[in-house]
Image (cartoon, rainbow, N blue to C red; front, side, top):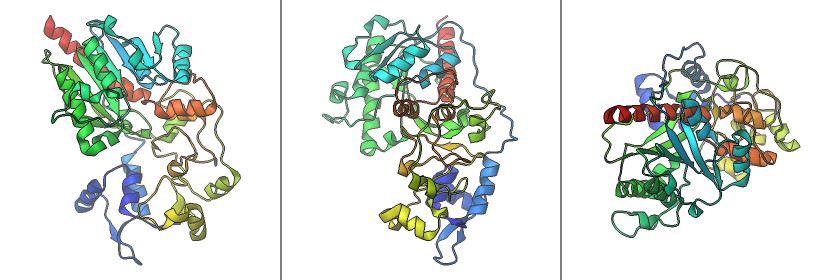
Length: 410
């Protein structure tokens, strides 16, 4: 069993940046030591596990609530809706979905199956005109993909973004003219094109009449989601409105995999049985040797070299490879495929990937939310989704803003 973890490995496991770990070392929260052979600064595995026990303490009570009652009916138009994670969360918060646009036919079938009353606009967003919703819809939301722009001038304008899906998001916001718009994306948008893409998005929203609130990366584990997922949130407020938008407050309880899959505070019964992917025999034999919360470095040295191939000699922790999740920790970010070598998420007790319903639980979808399509399609829909509980918390923050806006006008 491996005794020590590198800085990169520890940062990945704890879910903090390397800079935070260095600060913790100075503050005595988690002390680095010298590895006896290499003399590198490393962390004792026992110390990290003890710290995780403190970070993810089951006994901690959640004293935070973002719940707020809408003063009137508020409506949302959702773009790039996927299988409905954000939409279900918004619905749970108390917002009414007036229409959802999505291009993927399987995701659309999922939306229609679960919410026959929702107006699902299936097809390419470029083919739809949304001006019928002008000054009717209270919020436009959308998880637009991250694409590079053409930089025509010093200050990027709407036309420079033509051909990208952010252009379409901005076009719809301009057509609909809601008090508030919310875009969400992967954390990688921060560094995309050295930050220029995000700068461009902000200048485009400015051009169409929206002030952008300082953007924030929300960690799903802080919002009742048993998963270390991060989403960048971009909030635009129409320039004629002086009401301040506030991000949802972080909860002070962190949920873990046991909370996701077993009866408890998050769900009132154990996870239902469902279909799931399987490992090939060779991979199963390898992962059989990995303990809970372990990964490829917990294998015998000869098997490490065999399984990792050339990657064994490269730098970095690669802590997602041959990774088995522990019951007492949040799951690592789910991907669109449950058995990718670089991002392994093996069940704690059984040597297999998570099933479809386990995937859905980790994303906090309700058990009665049915996914349409092949098993691979279902995994893809769930892996791409915004966690429902995170969507609900963002929904409360929107309602909070809209309540203040309504009171301001009266």
